[in-house]
Length: 105
Image (cartoon, rainbow, N blue to C red; front, side):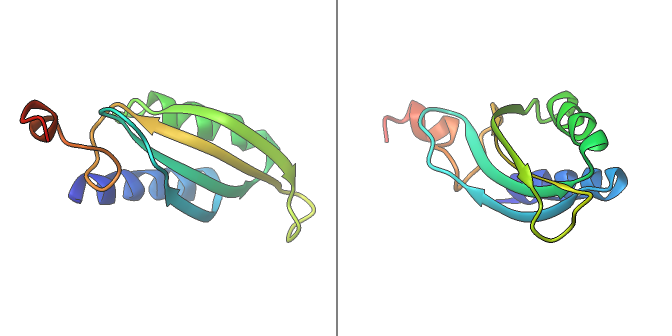
């Protein structure tokens, strides 16, 4: 899905500008008309909040939830974070499309 690729590209570009290092991004099962990703990353603590806020303010209108913080095992100066990013934008492969839901499929 090109929208999923665009979302991941936007998240990665913002991460590069912010000094955030992606560890993993996985689609997670959702219901209804939303798409969701589980994201794991390492970042300096001082930039993590700004990065999460920028994701929520992005054109994707992401909602950040279930944030878990820990110490990075790789870098003493970084925080390891895991969170769920949910988008009201339908992403093929993550949720049903509006045409599928209208057709009753």
